[in-house]
Image (cartoon, rainbow, N blue to C red; front, side, top):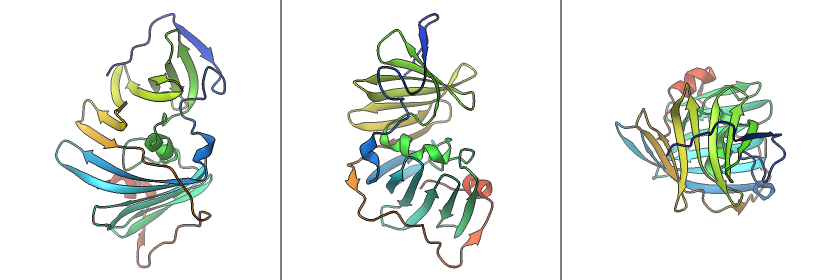
Amino acid sequence: MTLGVGCGSLTTVPASQGSSQPPWQLAEEEYPSQRLLRLKFDDGSGGGSFRLALRLAAPDRYQARAVDLFGRPLWSAEVEPAAGTVVDHRQRRWCAIAGRAEGLRLPLAPFPMTALPALLVGRLPAQGEVRRLAEEGRFEVTGVDGLRWTGRERSGELVSWTLWREGDRRLSWVRQGGEAILSDPAGGFQLRWRSGTRHELPLPLTAMRLPEGYEEVPCRLLLDRLSPI
């Protein structure tokens, strides 16, 4: 699905204003909470399914844990404002996030790790300057990294977005019948999931414990080789 931007039809508004909340912002009731999701991944040469537990403590703090369909751990992540940890359980390796995590890519898609909750819950995985189109529900966002996003909302709910790079669609996301579909038109990548039911977080979020015997490596090395399945 291609979302175009008509010339002369944009109105710039601050990110905190407009007819609805910013497209990346999660609802207040998301904190604290947890969701259990099942995701299907296909990279064009193969794919599979896995389960993911997303635990949200605050807008800037979360934990995620992915397991295969037999319950075997695949990877875990913990992100806080100025620290965090990523663990590759199959390779028995881990890394410590030094400083903020905006520059580290997700194993699910090429987004910052800080964007994982927004992506999975069905919000825009980017922040920046919002321009709202004259056509109701459509918007454009220029991210802090300079990338351009277009999207559409209906009754405050995000229904689709597209990431553009040099005039071409880099990634597209759409909500269809309760299912979220993230796809790369050029690379054959696709990820499908349902946002799942939000549940109360039963306990305060405690720091993730590292398994014994795992090797510490640089985060970029770990994430470059980390597969979601």
